[in-house]
Length: 469
Ligand code: FAD
Ligand code: ZN
Image (cartoon, rainbow, N blue to C red):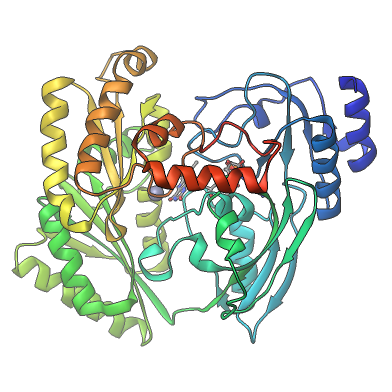
C-alpha cells in the first residue's frame, strides 16, 4: 500500500482532521528535554478505544509501527517517533473522559489521555484523594503514568502508579481490546496481565483506560522544611520522622544546595526558605486530628531533630499557601535545570542505608575525573530514589560537554549504583535513553524473559520498537 493510501485508511478511521501529516509537528516529534527529535509518517489522534483498535489493526496490516504518546513529558525519549519517517505517532490526548467514579468502591475509571491533574481534581470533587503527584501533573496523562509506572512525591505512603491501579483496558498489538477494567482489590485469576502492561512503556500494547484507587482525604496536611548538614543527617531525620509520625509521613524529599541555587537563579520570584543549607529536606505529613495539633506534632518531631543534631534549622508552613510555595520550590528544580542547559540525567535508586556513603563518594570521584562538572542532586530520599544529574562546568557549552563526557560519567555512576545493589532507573523508565545500558547491565535471564514476553504479545514488533529492550 502506498503511504497516501495508508494515510487515507487512517483518515477513514479517525476523521481527516485527526490525522496530521507534514507541517509543524514538533510538539509530537520532539521530547520534553529536546534531546530526541524524530519524524512521524503521521500523527493520529483517535477519540475512542474502538478507533485505537482500528488504527492498530491498520498499522499491523500495513507493517507500520506505532509509538503511543500521552502528555509527552517522558524523560527517557520513549514517546517520540524515531527519525525514519515510517512510524505512526498515536496521540491519546482525545481519550480524556472520566468514565466513572465509584465512591463506595473507592475507585475512578479514567481514559488514558486524562491529564493527571484533572483526575486529582475529579477525585477531590467527590471528597476523595488520588495521590499520584509529580511536577508534570498539569500535562502528563494517566496512560503515560501507567506506561512508565511513574513515582513522584507521595510514593512513601501510597506507592508508585502500579500500586494505584486496579484494572486496565488495553488495545493489543493485534488490535484486540482487553476489557480488564475491574475495580477488584482481590482477583487471582491467572497471570497478572495488568502488571505486565504497567511499566511496559508502550512496547506491549496501548493502554486506553484504567480503574484507579482512591483514598479518603487526610483531615490535615502539614509541610515543613529542614536544613541538614549531610545526607547522613537527612537519613537520620527520615528515621526519626518515621518513628514519630508513622504512616502519616507521605513525602520526604531531599535537595542539595546547588540544585536549589538553580531555582534561585532561574525563578528568583520563588521563596528561599532556608538559604545556605548544604542539604534541605521537604517533609509532608498527613494527620487525622486538628490542624493545630498535627502542626504541633510535626514541630515537636523537628525540635527533637534539632536537639539530636540531625537538623540545624527548620520551618513549618503556616498555611496552605506557604505549603504550596515550599512544594513549588522543590518542583521547580527540573525546570530550572533545563533552563540552565542540557544535562546528564540519572534516576537511580539505592537502599536508603547506602545513600549517605554514595553521595560524597560519587562527588569526590566526579570532582577528580571531571573537574568543574556541577552535580544537581535531589530526589525522593524516603523511597531511596535520587535524581543525580550533571550540568556542564560554568561557561562550558553543554552539548559539547555531553558528547565528550556522558558515556564515561554514566559508567562511573552506574558501576557504583550496581555495586550497591541499586537500579539505573528508579521511576522514569528505560525508553531510548537507557536501552543500551539495560542491555549491558541487566540480568541475562531477566532480559531473556522480557524478550519472550515481547515476542509473545507483539510478534510483529510493531509496538514502540527499539524501546526498552
Ligand atoms: P509520555 O511522555 O507521552 O509517554 C511516556 C512513555 O509511555 C512512552 O514510552 C510512551 O510510548 C508510553 N505511553 C504513553 N501513553 C501510553 C498509553 N496510553 N499506552 C501505552 N503506552 C503509553 N516521572 C516520575 O515517575 N516521577 C516524577 O516525579 C516525575 N517528575 C517529572 C517532572 C517533570 C517536570 C517532567 C517533565 C517529567 C517528570 N516525570 C516524572 C516523567 C514523566 O512525567 C512521567 O513519566 C509521566 O508519567 C509521563 O506521562 P506522559 O503522559 O507525559 O507520557
Ligand atoms: Zn522524581
